[in-house]
Image (cartoon, rainbow over all chains, first blue to last red; front, side):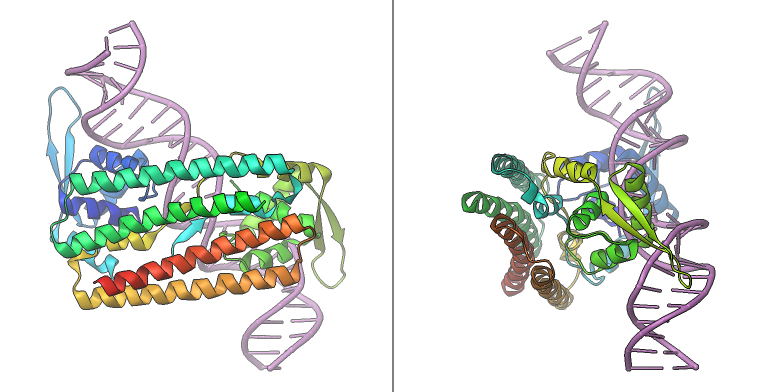
Length: 176
Length: 176
DNA sequence: CTCCCCATGTAACACGTTACATGATTTG
DNA sequence: CAAATCATGTAACGTGTTACATGGGGAG
């Protein structure tokens, strides 16, 4: 369920090398994969085997050859099919709430410090997704007004997730 | 980062068998692990090796022996230490937002159907976490008022996550 | 001269899921 | 009689992370 479609998504905008894709993933918090070499290069090989991308090899005498991947018609169809697969609710791995659920054993000072630390972390995340949203719109301006609406909605949702988390933890801090 | 502490958490309330723990995980959406046999039985062996739990074997002639696990003092300390480890923001694997980001290729009818399906799924999740929160409080009433506050805060957060997701998708449906 | 960027990839490990395997007792 | 519940576990697989390995070019 899978990074492969995220790669195909990027390739709809432009042809890219594995290295380029790695940077795209590294720059993005909302695409939650680490984007490690292993995953990307393996996925590209698989996508190529399945005929969803083509590979152009640009030989360079003094450096390793650049392999530039381009999405195929079949690839575009596969991406479209994936977009229409039955949607699932987000999987939220909320470590901190599990920690809190067993936090009655710690003393008040430690608990406050924990909440403050958490608020700080969430705040950083919020700033990051906000900045990414701006950069994304600058770097890849939407081509249709519908795409603009969708992209705005996606960005808003990510911002709201962290903004609401931050409000919640601050409220809890007050309540205790 | 890890299921082992969730197991220790359950064991602070009562001694349990692997099978009991499996049910606890299966009943819980917020503890995001599947709670498969493999994970639980392996974790229990590891916890036992580390001295964080003790194992009492209750032999039964006609059935496999029940192995009842009890948390040790060392185990309680380990759990307490874990609760105080630096908190991290939630990891949100938001499949659907990735789908939406590339959804400009589908037609309006399909997109609406997709959003409706998604709203339905999220609604179901919301009902589930609400029901779980009630059951949890009935089955394991909090022992201190501080624990009650914490448990309420945790439950509220889970409900809010899905409630806000639902509002968001309904708003987007209107906007399109 | 060192560090970062470009550009490729492999190997080992950790984590998690599904399916397999066994067998008694209770419920419909 | 079939299915679910109790109770244990193993095997195979899939996914994802970290670390390893190589090597040229440019910036400070």
